[in-house]
Length: 380
Image (cartoon, rainbow, N blue to C red):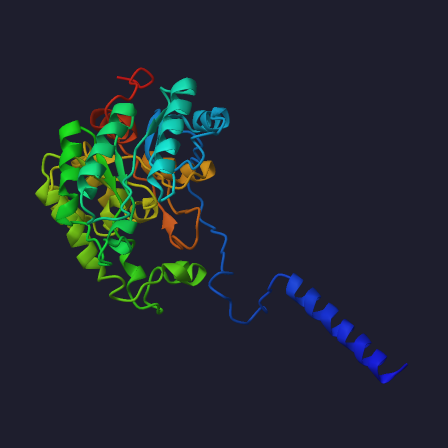
Protein backbone atom coordinates (compact mmCIF):
# COMPACT_ATOMS: atom_id res chain seq x y z
CA UNK A 1 0.00 0.00 0.00
CA UNK A 2 1.40 3.38 -0.97
CA UNK A 3 1.81 6.18 1.57
CA UNK A 4 -0.99 8.24 0.00
CA UNK A 5 -3.35 5.26 0.02
CA UNK A 6 -2.55 4.49 3.67
CA UNK A 7 -3.17 8.15 4.53
CA UNK A 8 -6.51 8.15 2.68
CA UNK A 9 -7.58 4.94 4.45
CA UNK A 10 -6.66 6.36 7.85
CA UNK A 11 -8.49 9.60 7.09
CA UNK A 12 -11.60 7.69 5.99
CA UNK A 13 -11.56 5.63 9.19
CA UNK A 14 -11.20 8.76 11.30
CA UNK A 15 -14.08 10.43 9.44
CA UNK A 16 -16.30 7.40 10.01
CA UNK A 17 -15.40 7.42 13.70
CA UNK A 18 -16.26 11.11 14.02
CA UNK A 19 -19.58 10.72 12.18
CA UNK A 20 -20.50 7.78 14.40
CA UNK A 21 -19.55 9.68 17.53
CA UNK A 22 -21.59 12.75 16.61
CA UNK A 23 -24.57 10.60 15.63
CA UNK A 24 -24.81 9.17 19.13
CA UNK A 25 -26.77 11.06 21.78
CA UNK A 26 -24.63 12.63 24.46
CA UNK A 27 -24.56 10.39 27.52
CA UNK A 28 -23.23 11.65 30.81
CA UNK A 29 -21.03 9.41 32.89
CA UNK A 30 -22.70 8.11 36.08
CA UNK A 31 -20.80 10.44 38.38
CA UNK A 32 -20.00 13.16 35.88
CA UNK A 33 -21.61 16.56 35.38
CA UNK A 34 -24.94 16.83 33.54
CA UNK A 35 -25.80 19.67 31.21
CA UNK A 36 -28.87 21.65 32.19
CA UNK A 37 -30.55 20.69 28.91
CA UNK A 38 -30.02 16.99 29.72
CA UNK A 39 -31.44 17.05 33.21
CA UNK A 40 -34.96 15.60 33.03
CA UNK A 41 -35.76 13.98 36.38
CA UNK A 42 -38.86 11.81 36.55
CA UNK A 43 -40.98 13.00 39.45
CA UNK A 44 -41.81 10.44 42.13
CA UNK A 45 -44.65 12.63 43.40
CA UNK A 46 -48.02 10.89 43.35
CA UNK A 47 -50.94 13.30 43.13
CA UNK A 48 -54.25 13.36 41.22
CA UNK A 49 -53.84 14.25 37.55
CA UNK A 50 -56.33 15.79 35.15
CA UNK A 51 -54.67 15.92 31.75
CA UNK A 52 -57.21 17.96 29.84
CA UNK A 53 -57.31 18.11 26.06
CA UNK A 54 -60.50 20.20 25.77
CA UNK A 55 -61.58 23.34 27.56
CA UNK A 56 -64.50 23.01 29.94
CA UNK A 57 -66.35 25.76 28.08
CA UNK A 58 -66.10 26.94 24.48
CA UNK A 59 -63.48 29.65 24.35
CA UNK A 60 -62.27 32.51 22.20
CA UNK A 61 -58.56 32.71 21.45
CA UNK A 62 -57.92 36.42 21.00
CA UNK A 63 -54.22 35.99 20.16
CA UNK A 64 -53.52 33.75 17.22
CA UNK A 65 -51.64 33.99 13.95
CA UNK A 66 -52.65 32.25 10.72
CA UNK A 67 -50.35 33.09 7.86
CA UNK A 68 -52.31 31.65 4.91
CA UNK A 69 -55.87 32.61 5.77
CA UNK A 70 -56.12 34.45 2.46
CA UNK A 71 -56.04 31.19 0.50
CA UNK A 72 -56.04 28.22 2.87
CA UNK A 73 -58.70 25.53 3.10
CA UNK A 74 -59.97 26.35 6.58
CA UNK A 75 -61.66 23.01 7.25
CA UNK A 76 -58.59 21.46 8.88
CA UNK A 77 -58.12 24.53 11.08
CA UNK A 78 -61.72 24.45 12.30
CA UNK A 79 -61.51 20.70 12.93
CA UNK A 80 -58.50 21.34 15.16
CA UNK A 81 -60.40 24.13 16.90
CA UNK A 82 -63.30 21.75 17.51
CA UNK A 83 -60.99 19.24 19.16
CA UNK A 84 -59.99 21.93 21.70
CA UNK A 85 -63.53 23.30 22.16
CA UNK A 86 -62.39 26.59 20.66
CA UNK A 87 -65.45 28.51 19.56
CA UNK A 88 -63.77 31.44 17.83
CA UNK A 89 -60.20 32.15 16.76
CA UNK A 90 -59.00 35.72 16.25
CA UNK A 91 -56.31 35.92 13.59
CA UNK A 92 -54.21 38.98 14.40
CA UNK A 93 -52.16 38.77 11.19
CA UNK A 94 -54.89 40.24 9.03
CA UNK A 95 -52.61 41.99 6.57
CA UNK A 96 -49.97 39.30 6.35
CA UNK A 97 -46.31 40.24 6.58
CA UNK A 98 -45.54 42.33 3.54
CA UNK A 99 -44.51 45.97 3.78
CA UNK A 100 -46.27 46.68 0.49
CA UNK A 101 -49.61 48.32 1.29
CA UNK A 102 -51.34 47.16 -1.90
CA UNK A 103 -50.26 43.55 -1.32
CA UNK A 104 -51.31 43.63 2.33
CA UNK A 105 -54.70 45.07 1.36
CA UNK A 106 -55.23 42.22 -1.08
CA UNK A 107 -54.20 39.73 1.60
CA UNK A 108 -56.71 41.17 4.07
CA UNK A 109 -59.55 41.29 1.55
CA UNK A 110 -58.91 37.69 0.51
CA UNK A 111 -58.68 36.54 4.14
CA UNK A 112 -61.96 38.23 5.03
CA UNK A 113 -63.63 36.76 1.94
CA UNK A 114 -62.30 33.28 2.74
CA UNK A 115 -63.65 33.51 6.28
CA UNK A 116 -67.00 34.88 5.13
CA UNK A 117 -67.62 32.09 2.64
CA UNK A 118 -66.52 29.27 4.93
CA UNK A 119 -66.67 29.89 8.70
CA UNK A 120 -67.85 33.44 9.44
CA UNK A 121 -69.07 32.43 12.91
CA UNK A 122 -65.80 30.74 13.89
CA UNK A 123 -63.04 33.04 12.66
CA UNK A 124 -62.36 36.74 13.14
CA UNK A 125 -59.62 38.96 11.71
CA UNK A 126 -57.79 42.01 13.08
CA UNK A 127 -56.06 44.44 10.76
CA UNK A 128 -52.57 45.94 11.05
CA UNK A 129 -50.78 49.22 10.33
CA UNK A 130 -48.01 49.61 7.78
CA UNK A 131 -45.46 51.85 9.49
CA UNK A 132 -43.34 52.43 6.40
CA UNK A 133 -42.79 56.15 5.74
CA UNK A 134 -44.05 57.46 9.07
CA UNK A 135 -43.59 61.23 8.97
CA UNK A 136 -44.20 61.55 5.26
CA UNK A 137 -46.80 64.25 4.49
CA UNK A 138 -50.25 62.69 4.73
CA UNK A 139 -49.04 59.40 6.26
CA UNK A 140 -51.20 59.66 9.39
CA UNK A 141 -54.33 60.53 7.43
CA UNK A 142 -53.78 57.59 5.08
CA UNK A 143 -53.26 55.20 8.00
CA UNK A 144 -56.48 56.34 9.66
CA UNK A 145 -58.40 56.03 6.37
CA UNK A 146 -57.02 52.53 5.85
CA UNK A 147 -58.11 51.55 9.36
CA UNK A 148 -61.63 52.85 8.74
CA UNK A 149 -61.86 50.99 5.44
CA UNK A 150 -60.60 47.74 6.98
CA UNK A 151 -63.19 47.88 9.76
CA UNK A 152 -65.93 48.52 7.20
CA UNK A 153 -64.75 45.45 5.30
CA UNK A 154 -65.04 43.30 8.43
CA UNK A 155 -61.89 43.64 10.54
CA UNK A 156 -62.80 43.36 14.24
CA UNK A 157 -59.85 45.21 15.75
CA UNK A 158 -56.27 46.39 15.34
CA UNK A 159 -53.14 44.42 16.19
CA UNK A 160 -49.85 46.25 16.82
CA UNK A 161 -46.66 44.19 16.60
CA UNK A 162 -43.62 44.72 18.78
CA UNK A 163 -41.65 46.19 15.89
CA UNK A 164 -43.26 49.48 16.90
CA UNK A 165 -40.79 50.71 19.48
CA UNK A 166 -38.10 48.28 18.36
CA UNK A 167 -37.15 48.99 14.76
CA UNK A 168 -39.85 51.12 13.12
CA UNK A 169 -38.12 54.24 11.79
CA UNK A 170 -39.62 57.40 10.36
CA UNK A 171 -38.59 59.05 7.10
CA UNK A 172 -35.81 60.87 8.97
CA UNK A 173 -34.37 57.56 10.19
CA UNK A 174 -35.36 58.07 13.84
CA UNK A 175 -36.93 55.37 16.01
CA UNK A 176 -40.69 55.77 16.18
CA UNK A 177 -41.69 55.59 19.83
CA UNK A 178 -44.79 53.67 20.83
CA UNK A 179 -46.28 56.95 22.08
CA UNK A 180 -45.29 58.99 19.02
CA UNK A 181 -47.86 61.82 18.62
CA UNK A 182 -48.15 61.05 14.91
CA UNK A 183 -49.92 57.82 15.87
CA UNK A 184 -52.44 59.41 18.21
CA UNK A 185 -55.16 59.75 15.54
CA UNK A 186 -54.96 55.97 14.98
CA UNK A 187 -55.60 55.14 18.62
CA UNK A 188 -58.35 57.75 18.79
CA UNK A 189 -60.04 56.37 15.68
CA UNK A 190 -60.12 52.88 17.20
CA UNK A 191 -61.99 54.35 20.15
CA UNK A 192 -64.44 56.10 17.83
CA UNK A 193 -65.02 52.92 15.83
CA UNK A 194 -65.45 50.84 18.98
CA UNK A 195 -62.75 48.32 18.07
CA UNK A 196 -60.02 47.17 20.48
CA UNK A 197 -56.27 47.51 19.98
CA UNK A 198 -54.27 44.41 20.87
CA UNK A 199 -50.75 45.72 21.36
CA UNK A 200 -47.50 43.86 21.93
CA UNK A 201 -44.69 46.03 23.27
CA UNK A 202 -41.18 44.85 24.22
CA UNK A 203 -40.33 41.31 25.34
CA UNK A 204 -39.61 39.70 28.73
CA UNK A 205 -37.31 41.94 30.76
CA UNK A 206 -34.60 39.25 31.26
CA UNK A 207 -33.80 39.60 27.54
CA UNK A 208 -32.22 42.96 28.48
CA UNK A 209 -30.46 41.63 31.59
CA UNK A 210 -26.97 40.10 31.74
CA UNK A 211 -26.93 36.54 30.44
CA UNK A 212 -25.46 34.91 33.50
CA UNK A 213 -26.34 32.27 36.07
CA UNK A 214 -28.86 34.61 37.68
CA UNK A 215 -30.96 35.09 34.53
CA UNK A 216 -34.11 32.95 34.58
CA UNK A 217 -34.26 33.05 30.78
CA UNK A 218 -30.68 31.83 30.37
CA UNK A 219 -31.65 28.60 28.61
CA UNK A 220 -34.05 30.37 26.26
CA UNK A 221 -31.37 32.90 25.37
CA UNK A 222 -28.79 30.17 24.84
CA UNK A 223 -31.10 28.32 22.47
CA UNK A 224 -32.34 31.53 20.82
CA UNK A 225 -29.41 33.98 20.96
CA UNK A 226 -31.18 36.43 18.67
CA UNK A 227 -33.53 37.29 21.54
CA UNK A 228 -30.74 38.69 23.72
CA UNK A 229 -30.54 42.47 23.86
CA UNK A 230 -28.05 44.84 25.37
CA UNK A 231 -29.31 47.05 28.19
CA UNK A 232 -30.20 49.89 25.81
CA UNK A 233 -31.16 48.03 22.63
CA UNK A 234 -32.95 49.92 21.24
CA UNK A 235 -33.71 51.61 24.58
CA UNK A 236 -33.98 50.27 28.13
CA UNK A 237 -36.88 47.86 28.71
CA UNK A 238 -38.61 50.19 31.14
CA UNK A 239 -38.64 53.00 28.59
CA UNK A 240 -40.50 50.85 26.06
CA UNK A 241 -43.05 49.88 28.68
CA UNK A 242 -43.46 53.52 29.74
CA UNK A 243 -44.08 54.55 26.13
CA UNK A 244 -46.86 51.99 25.88
CA UNK A 245 -48.43 53.17 29.12
CA UNK A 246 -48.37 56.75 27.84
CA UNK A 247 -50.60 55.63 24.97
CA UNK A 248 -53.10 54.10 27.39
CA UNK A 249 -53.04 57.29 29.43
CA UNK A 250 -53.57 59.59 26.44
CA UNK A 251 -56.49 57.58 25.04
CA UNK A 252 -58.85 56.62 27.86
CA UNK A 253 -61.77 56.12 25.44
CA UNK A 254 -59.92 53.42 23.49
CA UNK A 255 -59.88 49.81 24.67
CA UNK A 256 -56.40 48.27 24.71
CA UNK A 257 -55.63 44.57 25.13
CA UNK A 258 -52.11 44.36 26.53
CA UNK A 259 -50.50 41.27 25.02
CA UNK A 260 -48.72 38.80 27.29
CA UNK A 261 -50.14 40.55 30.37
CA UNK A 262 -47.91 43.50 29.55
CA UNK A 263 -44.87 41.39 30.52
CA UNK A 264 -45.86 41.64 34.18
CA UNK A 265 -47.27 38.12 34.80
CA UNK A 266 -44.29 37.55 37.09
CA UNK A 267 -45.15 40.66 39.13
CA UNK A 268 -48.88 40.64 39.76
CA UNK A 269 -48.57 43.32 42.43
CA UNK A 270 -47.20 45.70 39.81
CA UNK A 271 -49.78 44.59 37.26
CA UNK A 272 -52.52 45.14 39.83
CA UNK A 273 -51.38 48.75 40.23
CA UNK A 274 -51.44 49.24 36.45
CA UNK A 275 -54.94 47.80 36.18
CA UNK A 276 -56.05 50.46 38.65
CA UNK A 277 -54.34 53.28 36.77
CA UNK A 278 -55.57 52.23 33.30
CA UNK A 279 -59.23 51.13 33.39
CA UNK A 280 -59.18 50.98 29.57
CA UNK A 281 -56.49 48.25 29.64
CA UNK A 282 -57.32 44.56 29.49
CA UNK A 283 -54.73 41.79 29.41
CA UNK A 284 -54.44 38.45 27.66
CA UNK A 285 -52.44 35.43 28.77
CA UNK A 286 -50.68 34.35 25.58
CA UNK A 287 -47.26 32.75 26.17
CA UNK A 288 -47.24 33.60 29.90
CA UNK A 289 -49.21 30.72 31.43
CA UNK A 290 -45.91 29.40 32.84
CA UNK A 291 -45.65 32.47 35.05
CA UNK A 292 -49.20 32.06 36.32
CA UNK A 293 -48.81 28.33 36.90
CA UNK A 294 -45.96 28.74 39.36
CA UNK A 295 -47.93 31.10 41.61
CA UNK A 296 -51.44 29.59 41.57
CA UNK A 297 -52.79 31.23 44.70
CA UNK A 298 -51.68 34.74 43.76
CA UNK A 299 -52.83 34.14 40.18
CA UNK A 300 -56.27 32.98 41.28
CA UNK A 301 -56.72 36.07 43.46
CA UNK A 302 -55.69 38.28 40.55
CA UNK A 303 -58.08 36.52 38.16
CA UNK A 304 -60.93 36.78 40.61
CA UNK A 305 -60.26 40.48 41.18
CA UNK A 306 -59.94 41.34 37.48
CA UNK A 307 -62.21 38.66 36.06
CA UNK A 308 -63.85 41.18 33.71
CA UNK A 309 -60.54 42.30 32.17
CA UNK A 310 -58.62 39.11 31.38
CA UNK A 311 -58.85 37.35 28.01
CA UNK A 312 -57.71 33.95 26.80
CA UNK A 313 -54.88 34.08 24.27
CA UNK A 314 -52.24 31.58 23.19
CA UNK A 315 -50.13 33.24 20.44
CA UNK A 316 -48.37 30.37 18.63
CA UNK A 317 -50.67 27.86 16.94
CA UNK A 318 -49.61 24.50 18.37
CA UNK A 319 -52.84 22.69 19.32
CA UNK A 320 -51.19 20.23 21.71
CA UNK A 321 -49.89 23.10 23.88
CA UNK A 322 -53.37 24.32 24.83
CA UNK A 323 -53.59 21.44 27.31
CA UNK A 324 -51.22 23.28 29.65
CA UNK A 325 -53.48 26.33 29.62
CA UNK A 326 -56.61 24.30 30.37
CA UNK A 327 -54.88 22.45 33.19
CA UNK A 328 -53.55 25.60 34.86
CA UNK A 329 -56.85 27.46 34.56
CA UNK A 330 -59.31 24.68 35.36
CA UNK A 331 -57.71 22.12 37.69
CA UNK A 332 -56.05 22.05 41.09
CA UNK A 333 -53.35 19.67 39.85
CA UNK A 334 -49.91 20.02 41.39
CA UNK A 335 -46.35 19.93 40.10
CA UNK A 336 -46.83 19.18 36.40
CA UNK A 337 -44.46 20.16 33.57
CA UNK A 338 -44.77 23.02 31.15
CA UNK A 339 -44.59 22.12 27.46
CA UNK A 340 -41.34 24.04 26.72
CA UNK A 341 -38.44 23.64 29.09
CA UNK A 342 -36.69 26.76 27.81
CA UNK A 343 -39.73 28.83 28.82
CA UNK A 344 -40.16 27.18 32.20
CA UNK A 345 -37.85 24.69 33.85
CA UNK A 346 -40.11 24.90 36.91
CA UNK A 347 -43.39 23.01 37.40
CA UNK A 348 -47.00 24.19 37.11
CA UNK A 349 -49.87 24.23 39.59
CA UNK A 350 -53.54 24.63 38.76
CA UNK A 351 -55.58 27.66 39.80
CA UNK A 352 -58.95 25.83 39.80
CA UNK A 353 -60.79 28.97 38.75
CA UNK A 354 -64.51 29.19 39.59
CA UNK A 355 -66.84 28.50 36.67
CA UNK A 356 -68.04 32.09 36.37
CA UNK A 357 -64.46 33.38 36.19
CA UNK A 358 -63.59 30.72 33.62
CA UNK A 359 -66.53 31.74 31.44
CA UNK A 360 -65.44 35.37 31.50
CA UNK A 361 -61.83 34.57 30.65
CA UNK A 362 -62.78 31.99 28.03
CA UNK A 363 -65.44 33.94 26.14
CA UNK A 364 -67.60 36.53 27.92
CA UNK A 365 -65.00 39.28 28.04
CA UNK A 366 -64.05 38.83 24.39
CA UNK A 367 -67.70 38.88 23.32
CA UNK A 368 -68.14 42.14 25.21
CA UNK A 369 -65.22 44.09 23.75
CA UNK A 370 -64.77 42.66 20.22
CA UNK A 371 -67.66 43.78 18.01
CA UNK A 372 -69.60 41.46 15.75
CA UNK A 373 -68.63 38.07 17.19
CA UNK A 374 -71.28 35.35 17.02
CA UNK A 375 -72.65 34.67 20.50
CA UNK A 376 -74.93 31.75 19.68
CA UNK A 377 -72.35 29.02 20.34
CA UNK A 378 -71.58 30.15 23.89
CA UNK A 379 -73.61 29.39 27.03
CA UNK A 380 -75.41 32.20 28.89
